[in-house]
Length: 320
Image (cartoon, rainbow, N blue to C red; front, side, top):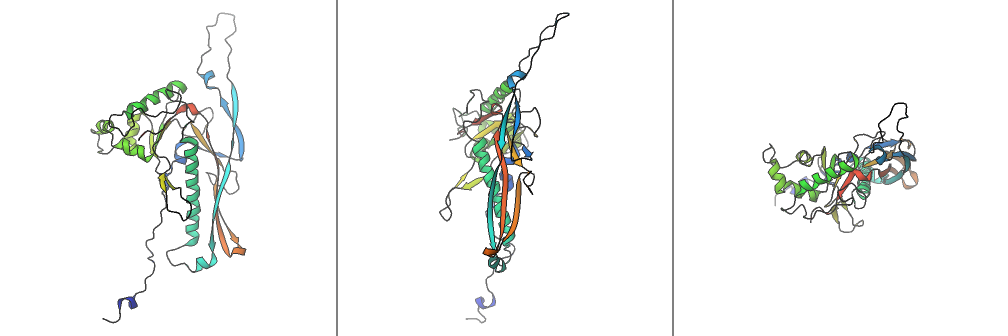
């Protein structure tokens, strides 16, 4: 046996240029990319709603000489929002910090961990608020749509199905839907669908992109929501699934929060919360001396509201 032995000249140590962590990219989350974020100074407040019907009915009349003009008006109601504060922390123990090998950085990792936790929570809240049945009424049937022939069937007509609802929403509201959001299972079906492939075969793209799908559907943007989650309890075997699954949402989303403009939804972010960022988010670090640790705490304060349900159509179980 040659000396020195292999194990005596090298002691295994962690590599400093790689590590493995399953952190979802921010681009996989859609919560802040569909509906506008409305910065609010107060945790709760109200906003005005103009009656849609009054603005789409013309009461103008012919005016005879010496007579008054026809009178008319519109109704106003109010609705409220109330931002909840979501919070989570990760403690960094002094002993753990001082004994950590490179490339570990417990303070950096804790900050990234709590930030990711909050972003995932917001995504889950977005899905449960907007990307679900019983919310949207703008479709041709005024209810959720489940395609008679699912879109992963070659005999289905997804382009016609979506365009039909684009027309229905526009007729009801005067606003043409501009965003189509879909789960990964729907994306998988659409990019391989014969009708879609036939429409794009003369383009420079061999595989349909989200931009090409937007052109086919007649909307400005198509977004695929790739967020995934683990529904198992801590230390149990992972149970992973997509947050947005086999569904899709067609909706009008205002480009920016503004007066006298509908939007399928808004995210009210409490930026008046001391130290909060533009999305109601803040990260704090403070000493927990009795634990001999520093606490990295993240908070995010928001409320999500579907404020104009008739500018959206939800496709439930669009694929099998």
